[in-house]
Length: 95
Image (cartoon, rainbow, N blue to C red; front, side, top):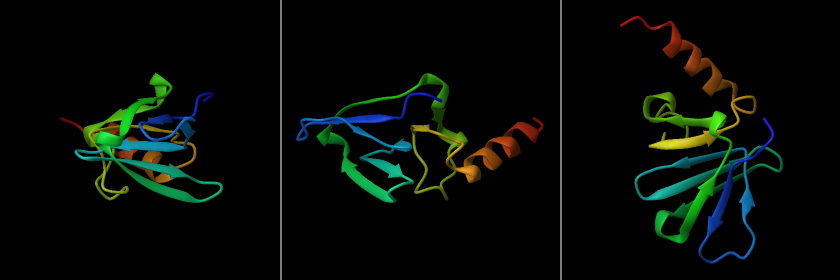
């Protein structure tokens, strides 16, 4: 995937790129593998989040055990094998 999720903040001049951005009810959780970083930004301090649409996951595709889950998020699943495994498990479920 070529575009890393990018967060545009109210108080920051430059947008910030991450490997994963989770939009939760009141915060945005931003993760970077190298250098290792986790950042939590109040939702009212975020202008918008950009990312490759192929990276967009929603609701049940993001387990709550993964940094609290999210309403939606841009996740480079190649960086997070636990998400790849979770998506494969969902795919195997029969309804």
